[in-house]
Image 1 (cartoon, rainbow, N blue to C red):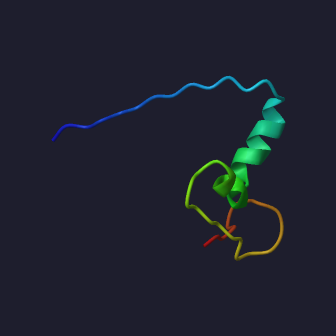
Image 2: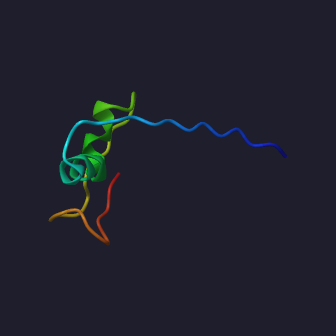
Length: 53
């Protein structure tokens, strides 16, 4: 079986902490991924055990 692998590199002129915080917030992924809606099921900050639909 063969595999197709695409590698993309993007330079973002921003603090790594701010970028990580944005990408780690799954509820924001719909802003840059078409036809995707994610909502938090659990309360509180993002962390181990957080749940999403």
